[in-house]
Length: 193
Length: 283
Image (cartoon, rainbow over all chains, first blue to last red; front, side, top):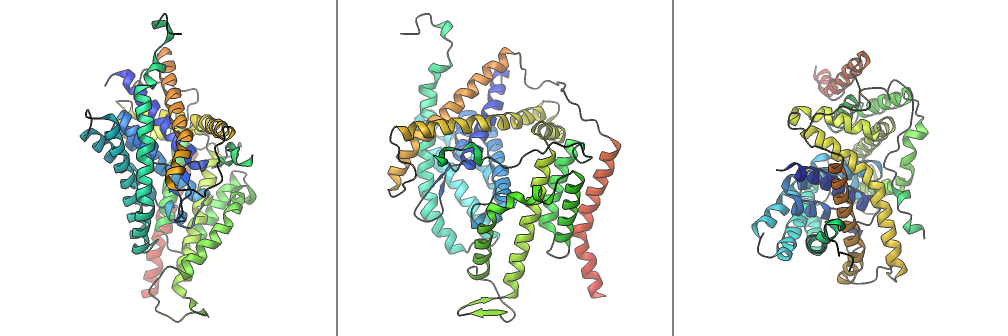
């Protein structure tokens, strides 16, 4: 890869990880939902990073997101389940996989339609998060299995929908509209029309 | 307007400046101790290892000049949740009970297993809380990224991968307040245009439609800032994968070796004492 590409990868990883941290710390990343447990969209930066810059970036963002959720659970828990999130096997490991699956799905559909492939990547990444985290919680004995299945049905699907809509909106607007902002005004003498 | 003061909620861990021996330890050593400490907490049974570990952490905190108020002050807003967690663990999670209930209130009973499980959960939580607070109180962000670079060096020192990772950590920390401010601006802007945040009596589609004008500008602004930063770095001749020097070097000193020995000793003794005790019981 070229050097410019590598700098961009470093910076996008860091910025998306920061977005994830901000979404978590400011509670913006939680959409209140009738089932009691809020919908989380903190994993959307992971999906966007994976779609924009590839699997390694997605996995590192996922790792930082996981470590942050671990720290947040240890230092400022906000719910009954948070006590279990101080276990890195629950909070970090599943989140590393999100980037991988989102990128794989995006790649499988790449080149056909940007919107469609991003939507599918969002759904895949979100479901990976739901299944692996809740599965790990169930294995740790935090919640009984039938409650887990109820959460998957009530929250997981809605989360997948929200993640798909948001990541598609961001990626499409960035890839189509965003390219205008990147160009310097000097290259374009009559750019101010 | 209190809902919009987003920056105030960002107090994960505050650095407490100091001049103690703990502050001056090598950053890589601090990170290793944090990881080993977490393993200790997870590998230890309830008694007597966790209270001993708690005491050790507290003594380290005292050496660093931190009072108990500094160390455990952050736990106060969390206490109601802890009570809730305790109630759920005691009464709602089904477990195999071998003995009789200690206390029976209508159909809810307090069993020894439940008590033990809850106690272990809580002592782990408090140990980890103390560990994280201690770590963030004595370690600056640049020390964290420097320590991470040292630790990742075996993974990819030649290709500069460890430096990339430490740069990611630094940029992440730098961007958190910027993006929090950005999020605050966007929330205020949308609220001033009539976005009704705080009223949640609506369907999912409506909620997501409410969130999209918040989140998409936040993401796009973050990506734009990233793009600007890439350009700025390249304009200043940043080359990824090159060996570079630092403003502050952290040489490995004798007291670092001593501290490392102590940490490793604790790491093997605390979880290992479980076997010593069980052997004594059998003899």
